[in-house]
Figure (spheres, rainbow, N blue to C red):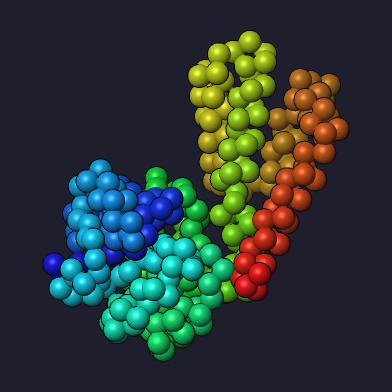
Length: 268
């Protein structure tokens, strides 16, 4: 069996990457294959997406050109010995807290390694994807990787020293935003709307706001001021929200996620 893209690990992130690649039509132009140490996961996802899956890595006739490593860091050394023989593959690691040098060490030396920290929104092609390249990966291959990842969302080059901050903001951000969406929806329900309508209104309002801010370049504070007319309903609501300290709590949440990511990277 030959392959050009392999996703190793079919948990939440690996599944999101696979689904995003299929959504982007990569399965029509590339050969995709899935692998998980729990082979039933790979089988179920492969059947759902109508793409190939394998029980054992040695089923591959040729190493993949691109390998997404989406396994738990503790499970990686068990397969690293085999992967170390794949000298022409590009290894795209999404393992939290594992630096490029540590991936290279497990693989047995210089390899083409990319460290990325996407969020689950890659599944719908709207992910945030910071990437860091190992020095051994030449410019041409780096550009190929950026093109591949661009089908999953907004991809940009970063440095490893920023990964913890980007994990807290972009990686954990969808959970924080989902909590806020749920709270807005519940507010609508409290005011008499059924939850289905409240959710649709909340999602469209958030989508419209995000697109407006992105396309206009307006600072969020300025847009907030534009919506909040003097003595109106919005400023009354904002005052109540500020009394609860929402702004500080959100900032503290990002900081807490950052500190946890930093501890993970420090091996704690």
